[in-house]
Length: 309
Ligand code: NAP
Image 1 (cartoon, rainbow, N blue to C red):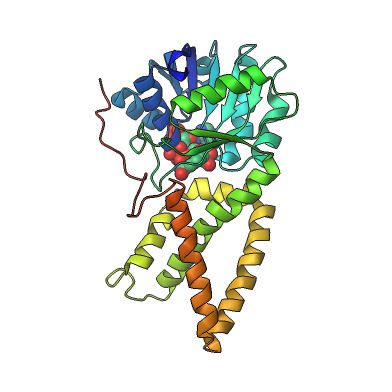
Image 2: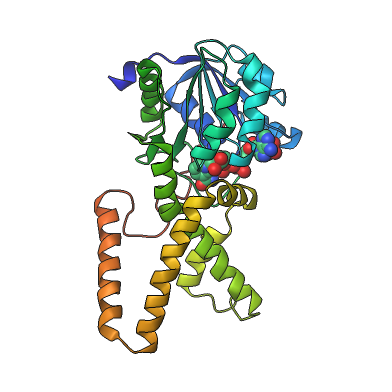
């Protein structure tokens, strides 16, 4: 049934970094649009997108890109989504679907919604798929395969538009879920945002110590450095735009860390063993749910596909 959906006449990709360029690649592979308009802020990134042959047309004029588009996907750092929405609003076609891929949802909605013209279907979204790389070279068509894409639809969202967008993401390989923005932000704070903050913190501490962290980096530290190599702009924006949920989760994390510290101090081996046994089972459950395999780097490395046809 999914294979029978008709492609969009024109999709506009606003932002062509890791996520935007992965979308461009999967749209082409699956034939999801007749025309893909690519827009980005800088001439350098635009030139690279053109060299990679990611779309049908290229411009730094975002209004030109979204004009006549049936689907507009905004893939820029969350702190810039309001600015982008304000700029594209006058050029959006009535009946178009406008979505985003931002890692935080309540803030993106607050920034974008006021600019969305009547008759345009604004459906906030977030594909739970990514790597620590950024820019148009980093994308790959399989990025969204078997990952979740979460929508946080606003009250009164047109069910037909939501279904059309869901079908699009299913064709990109994703599983779909919907939830309210606050629930999204709280959930992502613990499964995505906190792990990055912890990684930034531990790698920063090791760096401060001037230790031989690089020479003797064990696999545990190396795993943290992968997360800590993530894009500084993106993660600065995530921290600033999901502040309350992150602070709530950091509070819980600190309490639990203090309890762990106490168990170590008092040589409470039983407590340590119980916790480590419980957490090992969590990893097993994630593997059983098909969201990880029993080897490092699953879903994080591009499967080599030639970019230019
Ligand atoms: P990226 O690779 O760094 O690409 C960012 C894109 O946004 C580039 O085209 C860049 O343009 C453009 N951009 C940057 N600042 C801008 C501004 N102030 N105004 C307009 N355009 C701007 O980023 P990404 O990893 O694709 O992330 C894009 C979005 O996806 C973010 O909201 C992020 O939260 C979300 N997301 C990321 C991941 C992940 O793992 N990376 C996963 C899920 C969702 P120029 O290069 O031309 O400056």
